[in-house]
Amino acid sequence: MPKMKTHRGAAKRFARTARGKIKRRRACHSHLLTKKAKERKRRLRSAALIDSSDRKRVERMLPYR
Image (cartoon, rainbow, N blue to C red; front, side, top):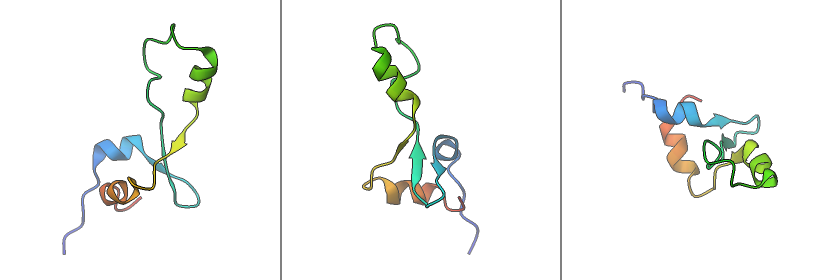
């Protein structure tokens, strides 16, 4: 069986934690920042974990990570 290919777009967006969970970046922090509250922008800086319903799909895109 040939090796599976990593989805390169997903590889740039997701990272695995030490416990095996998948980390993602939060949306809405790239532009139009003047109207957003500073508390909201601070919260958007931190990473989040993907939802359990998306885990299987993302793991299929990242077979060797």
